[in-house]
Image 1 (cartoon, rainbow, N blue to C red):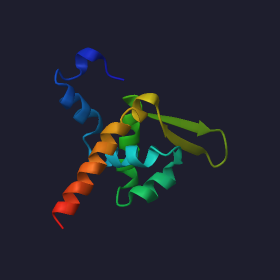
Image 2: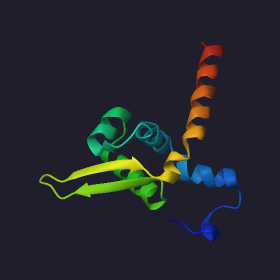
Image 3: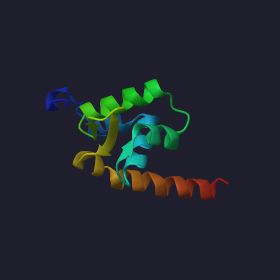
Image 4: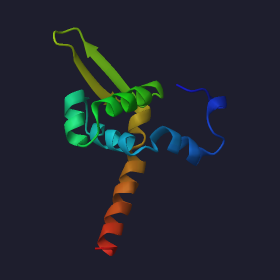
Length: 108
């Protein structure tokens, strides 16, 4: 996780730095209900490549938003879930969902 002095001074910029990518928001959306395996995430998100999804999950893990659990099985099983910090983004995602619904209703 980055230290405070490495984070932007503006709190909005900090939030965008952490979740401002299209894929990160969709990962958060899909992990809100609970733990998922990599394949489940890839399928639910859709057009994201394996390479990009892996990079986004690693970045989110490094920033303390996602927890990665590897099981000692053959083949290895890896599960992803939101940390408490990741779950704290729920009101932001809910607000984005409400705004999107209103926008779609007014512009369709």
